[in-house]
Length: 326
Image 1 (tube, rainbow, N blue to C red):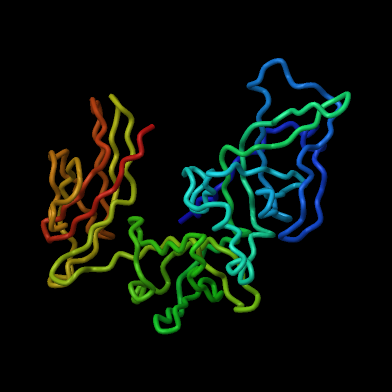
Image 2 (image 1 turned 135 degrees about the horizontal axis):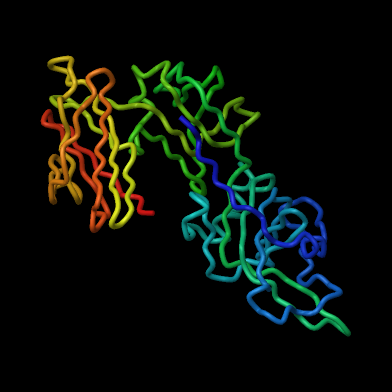
């Protein structure tokens, strides 16, 4: 299992970055609103853009700035900050991100800023100065990742361990707290019981006070059997219009027989109102590997790739997943 790091390459010219003034650390450091430069605006406005990724050294609630790599980025009123995934569009306000009560418990200073936006030129005496107005902003805590084996599950204490390191799920509402099964579905710590020794990936930040890794994104190989049914997880659903659809997944053993289902039917669409059966058009049937419960359906020359697929086992298990379309 591999952890998927979230990162954006910094393509902004180093010469322009060097124009920014480094600020002292602290949540209320005041940014210089416009940095003097010995250059004129480029003839093509499309070149007046920036990208930055770096360690957050300060922020200023009054001036609505976040500073990383010595570069102070201005967040316009109304711009939402993304804290879940860099590819998403924003989920909390700047004021929520920098809430003093939450900052007192765990500060974003030391975390990571990824931002894009426009370079604004302003006449400054005989020359110009520049400021950086954000169009997208992503903030995460300083990311730490552990990939290894699951152990020491403590449902009462709300912890588990990976490679001997204690993990506790994040409780800060500004950031994710996603504990996921093999199909990407939300589970609880209690659901992991019985899967000790399986692979697990934990992304989060280390809290020296607790002596624990605080998990924000935790991906497991958990696939729990449901009462009276097996369980189904779709682990991959990818397609290319007019070319190919590929759906992969895994089944759990059926508790009553101790065996896997022989096959799984794959449909377009999602589940019925009861959440117990797939609705839509049957795409095909995948044979289940009796050694490990895995299955794979590949269809070629598909004129139109569905937005979602649904897998249904004859032993009662169902699952859905959005299709990633290239």
